[in-house]
Image (tube, rainbow, N blue to C red; front, side):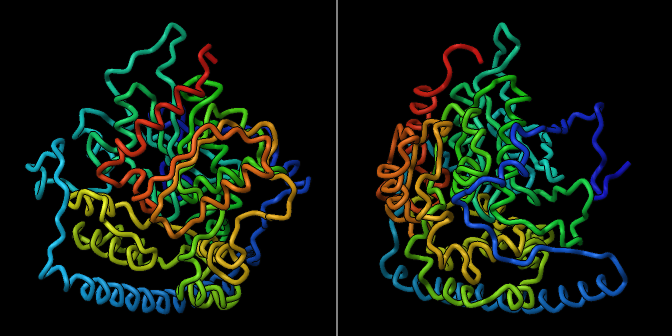
Length: 474
């Protein structure tokens, strides 16, 4: 039996658990009071199924597919030329890469690259179990649970203290498993924690209770829905699965920003009572200087009508998803992904172990809704407002906010974390900041991609988790 999304329907006899969760505060009530979050400006989808509307959608999507694919080819070609130009000086002055005693040189050239997460876990003696959470608005979310055979249960039948890790824009849980034993998820598991990785709606080809992926309503969401529905659903899934009332959360970039929005007044602040700590990595709250660049200025001129003509109303540039699914060479896809994102977001592999790069970018980019990208970069979007929330609002958070740790990079130009820190110190008196770490050499994704990530921040994460976790079983 199959659901409307084409995936097998879930039942009690399946190993994948479907967690149907009742939120402690219904969104209708939550949205009734004033809130600092700035609502999306795009026109919400209202679909009346008919031959005419389906034909109109097909033609519009075909045109936008051709236009956006053409633009993507131009960007990738431009990025490739730019990379080639900057690599010329290295012919005379090759860059010396640091060598690491812990690195197994025999792995170079022999590594398996796949979109199957289990492969990476089994290489280090672990396993990953697929689980499914269901949001209140009907989206299935892929949850990945690390299975460690060395973990024991306590007298209450519970495993070790649970940690949830969530990803940034265009990424997935695959980011946290491609560095072998030094992957964030596997390393935390080795330290004795139950590790779960959450994925936002649409990632790993997950569907909806009613809409299929050709329906515009499936893609009619932004960071607002991630904050209102995905974040609470993932947290409650881990709590219900493990039996713990409070869990630890590590979130990167967009997910960190979405979690902050979720815990703001008028949204879902009650989830703060369910977290022992919130570790935010490069939280996307204030825009960094990169958003002043040509790309963001150009996209910022597009209103919603023109945006739909160029990028459509479904997933953003679906050519990227097709390449992810069907490009036969992982090396080519990885090179394509790295070249494009390095050019657009000024990422470099300076701090990475180069042999891992193909694996790391096998999971990037992942599908994102067109409406979501419009919220970030379109007319009157985040890049122009410079903040995800209303700065004039007197106080974003209340006393339910959990202990907060913030990590950010000195070479991250996509977000401005120091503005957030200033806001927290002057206006957000209800927020207890337990740790702030600026990693001077780190870029936006180096908290899990950097070869030195264990030394730079992983050990510090454990200090924060142990400092804040409940000591009496809860």
